[in-house]
Length: 217
Image 1 (cartoon, rainbow, N blue to C red):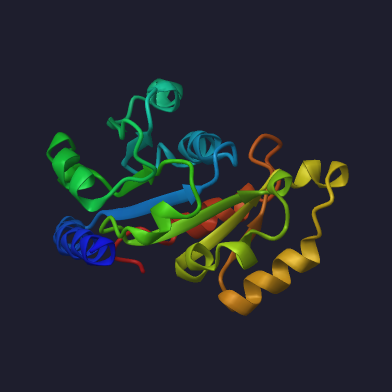
Image 2: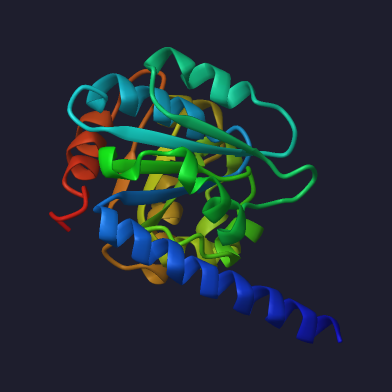
């Protein structure tokens, strides 16, 4: 019975995800589903991206969190459309929650819609939101075994950002092991080795994400 229930949930989620994806395609909006563990740097990545690209692209953000709106508050200074979704204990966003808030955006006036999913490497990877692609964000302080332990996310991600490389000397993170595991799971996936706070590697990220705008894929 439990397996049947989960299948029905996923089926319903996929149907709505397909509707969301069709709408994004119709409106020429590139929707990016950002997935990471808590504290890996998703919000800081959005801050740096908005600082660099906010004048070139029209950007909206959906913030997913269990209870607070603190991440959304950090982005208010950019004067962009932001919608907060509190899951009230849920470990991920789903396509129904995304669909319900899309009317709050003027999609005709957006190039990108970034979705900062709930901090979790497992559940968010299993639920299609209707995104254009998934983006995996990890940090050196989490350990180098994340691709091997959570292959679904890294298999589906269109790009991977490895954050906090400036802290690598103070950890036991083995960059070669990380690259090797990632290559076995998703050969050729772009990997950006970065420090969101210090700025390392962000120039390449800015160039790559700029080329992903709908219509230039």
